[in-house]
Image 1 (tube, rainbow, N blue to C red):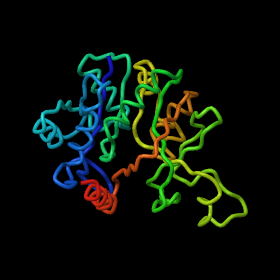
Image 2: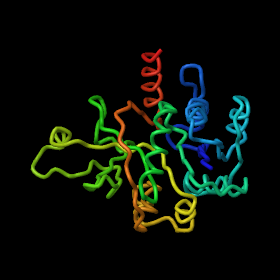
Image 3: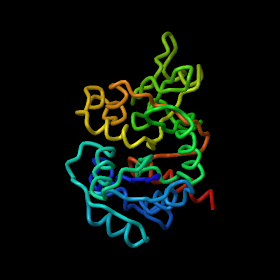
Length: 248
């Protein structure tokens, strides 16, 4: 059984209530929910939230929502708590962050199928930076990978550092890869993640995936050239609206 969970927290420092913001006629949580629930390999989709307003929006669009502890330290912890509340122990868990409104169902199908083929603790999405994106934007998480495609490190800083080259020219020296907030785990890997205390690196970078990576987990990366834009600020939301207007 494959279950997807969408952690959706109302509180946000830079964009409070962001799961409910309007993106060309649909709330962000609706756009993400429709992409996830439309994936053919996913059997059940649950929104894990800390707020009744988000739960009500999910119910309005015909989705399933579970209320979770608002003090949980990460979306992955919220994902696991929702499964526990529902007494679910699926073979595969897909954790989709609610601030990725440009995701498409076919991409999620490809990601899950790749995870099942590969022997990894977790599989996640990476995409090249596009021409109008800055590798120095701290909201855009960078990843460096080994020759086998597995993630070596995730950071808000531009990595790798390019010695002797002005920072404005780093992106011309080699491909930089952006991490997209979607994870596929076995249930045991997800349980391993939440059994660990938030790690030193996780707290420094404010990146939950570093908890499992620092513990020695294998994170495989699934490449896509899809144009994906997470929403962390009002400017991000407006950029997503522009992209959606061009699509239709």
